[in-house]
Amino acid sequence: MNRPVKKWTYQDRIIAPSLLAADFGRVRDETSRAINAGADWMHLDVMDGHFVDNISFGPDIILAVHETNDVFLDVHLMITRPDHFLPRFIAAGADLITVHVEPEADHDVSKTLAAIRAAGCKAGLALNPATPFEKVEPFLGEIDLLLVMTVVPGFGGQPFMEDMMAKVEKGVALRAERGLNYHIQVDGGVGTETAATASKAGANVLVAGSSTFSAPDMAAAITAIRQA
Ligand code: DX5
Ligand code: ZN
Image (cartoon, rainbow, N blue to C red; front, side, top):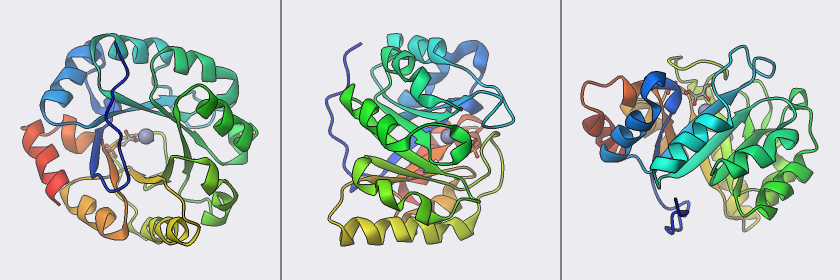
């Protein structure tokens, strides 16, 4: 499939359902269901059982999604050595690849971000709830997206940590101050109410797993998050 042509900016409100909450026996149909329900991006959570205490899926599942859909693929790598696995995710059709800033991810953050961009992908940088904002500050000029985790990564269905909004606000302030241009994404516990909180703080990309895939009416759930 061709890469999407739309140029997303941080002025866009972007809803990214997380495939983690889908029926894994039908990932292609589940992706189509999300797109038909109004998803802008698909958020793909890759977990390796080392960086986080769970194992999800790898490049082959992402390729399966990519081969049947033109949707923008937002790949969130919760893995150690993301630099080592990068070429496989790029080949699988990722449009944006987000890596973690924590030392446990075991990579040279600047080098990885540069390698992602050199491959023609957008580069994202994530920080866990326990990681202070200062850790991402040196890299803000090297990213297309800042991911503020609003749960401890590893599992869907956890409650939204509202105190992370201070990091979102910091991301907004530094973006303006330094004349930068990156999306701000929140991930974990996002539903209608928390989407309003996150948007108010300045996040424009809202990842939502359980609140979309498990909703009785996915289109209504996505619309509600978009309008929150
Ligand atoms: C958590 C993942 C999230 C997760 C969110 O480790 O990074 O993307 O799928 O799930 P919900 O929206 O159910 O909290
Ligand atoms: Zn995620």
